[in-house]
Image (cartoon, rainbow, N blue to C red):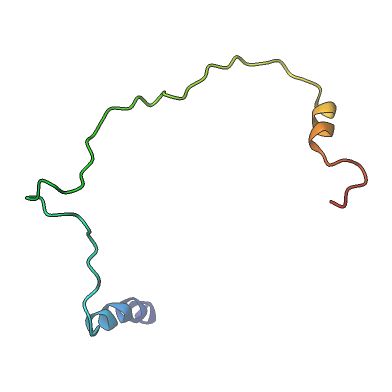
Length: 76
């Protein structure tokens, strides 16, 4: 347990000794700047690309499998 605690504490101690500050994480613009590149929010329906499909009955699997398998004599 002592070893696990020391391994978890090591990155914190080494991070505190860093010579430089980390890069700025947020790249957001100034909120007071009205010319910042903020897009307008528009509603988009979640079912925009929906296509209705009816279920089909079962088909024989052997011809379907043969159609998807490589041709005989292939090196696969």
